[in-house]
Image (cartoon, rainbow, N blue to C red; front, side):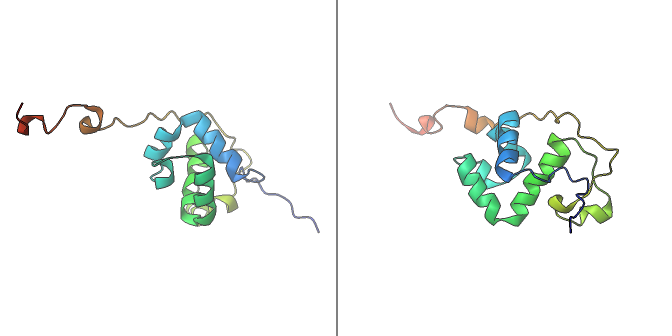
Length: 125
């Protein structure tokens, strides 16, 4: 018996392709700011991120939701659909993906940007 595929934008999209697409479009800095997951912040790579995301359902759901609602610009789901994981959500047939949201990386704190020696005033020359 064949099951009819409902309108699910994640159907057939592998996690690796999804993550690669996001990294190529936004970069690691923006992803780390937008999705607060350590694998995007410290030594990010596709391989290590995939390993973490495959083992951690909550993190994978965050990335998939970001992909659907920020990158694909689909409208937010109703309450019933929101209860489901992103891979199980159905999108009405009349809704089509839009342009990716424009997201800029957050400004780094002044302490990180500055290369001033904070101990200089305590040292004696």
